[in-house]
Image (cartoon, rainbow, N blue to C red; front, side):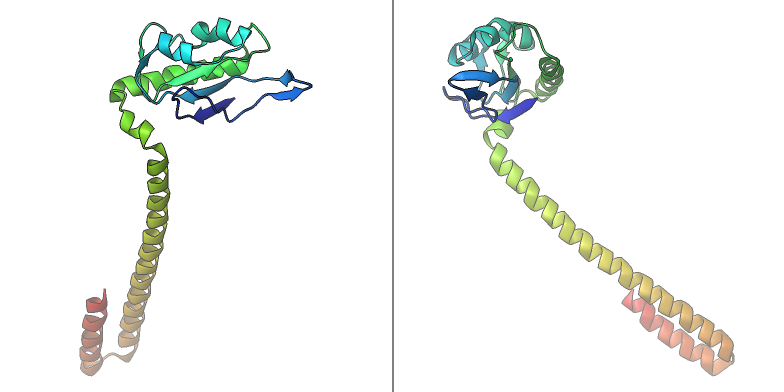
Length: 182
């Protein structure tokens, strides 16, 4: 099963290219792309270069967009051109397409995410890098707190062993310093 992000302005560049020997396709699989502009299903189908079987199956595979305006972000399925029957991969893509349609309809089909996909993907990558860096800093901070608390505990045990008023005053002064560090 292949899903691709495609800038669809009259051209097609699937991630999966059928393997051909002597000009004949020996292996074909269904694939899908994400629609990036608002258009009718008829306009969309007219722009695609579909093989005989893929064209025959197009409406059945894309029941989620048939006779409606196809919103940006919706999945468009191109069927396996080697068979007229629906394959397991096509059925999985259809299920995914319905889930995506429901999500897009709930969000209003915002074209921003589709048009800025590459930028958003980079930003998310940088964000995860920032989260990792912040996570490392937080981890170091927590280790420093644990170390300071261990020092306070050791200081308390030491003052209990010593006993007496002078040891108590020294303990309180050093404890204040350690609490200030926290």
